Amino acid sequence: MSSRLLAPVVEHVPEGIVAVALPTPFPVGDVNCYLLLDEPLTVVDPGMRWADSTDILTAALREVGRELADVDQVVVTHGHPDHFGAAGWLAEVADAPVLCGRAEVPKVTGAAANRPALLELAGRLGLPDSLRATAGAFFQDVRHLAHPIDEGRLRLLDDGDLLAAGGRDWRVHVTPGHAVGHVSLFDADARVLVSGDHLLASVTPNPVLEPDPAYPDGRRRSLVEYLASLERFVRLDPLVVLPGHGPRFSAVATLVHTTRRHHARRAADIARLVRRLGDATVYELASELFPEARDFSVLLGISEVVGHLDLLEDEGRVARSGNDRGRYVLT
Image (cartoon, rainbow, N blue to C red; front, top):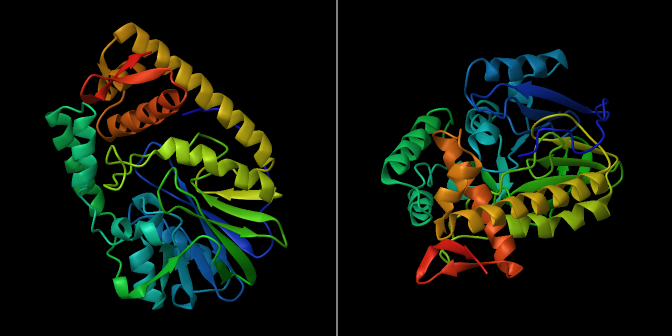
């Protein structure tokens, strides 16, 4: 991940929208929750049930003269717990529906809470059994920070849908990459984009491993899909982007250019590692690239490395070693 700003920062928040920073226990820090104040009153990404997060959200609503019970709908950009963990709680208190991308349902409902398919996939990529057990325990611990979501409350969003929220009409953009069913919302009239974690000015989003038995390796090609989606957002040309973490920003074309350069450099770094290590697993490459990674961060490192190996493989610069689909050599 890059740590420098990738695009110009925007200080203001569009009229009728309130940004609320909610704490998380993760290295990424606060998650950005957005209150879309006009009718229907909508809360986007209400954070998780950790520390005083729900108290902060309650206070933010009261500051604008609203109560939790006034919330008409809850939107979850993707099924990572720092974004959806409190959605079930808020939906129950407000008697409101939860809207999310169709492909994110197993995550937000807890059906994939311990992620056995993900851990099995990571094992095929070289993750030792001891670290698989550690990651599994992490998933179970985080599960307690997410309030269950009643499936009867779910309304599923598809790419191209039109969503009325906060007095605006938002076009739904479902783009895999950071998450397979990740939802971004675009108000074309005001040129405002709620980008979740798909576009961030402070870091490059991790191309998280997404198990999928329909694909040859049992997983989606998350980084390839992510990079393919970016031109769509350049064409939208929003005036302000409201991201899931970090500062608001503009100039999506600048961010996309910088992001592509970052991934090209990272791919080159990994190609050099493949040359040095020879017949290496993804885990071995990730351990070299991110030697200080611990616990769940090891899985993020594997996601990062295998995503760039996909790019290198498409370019014919690396190949699988023999019959082992989890090892790579330089061509």
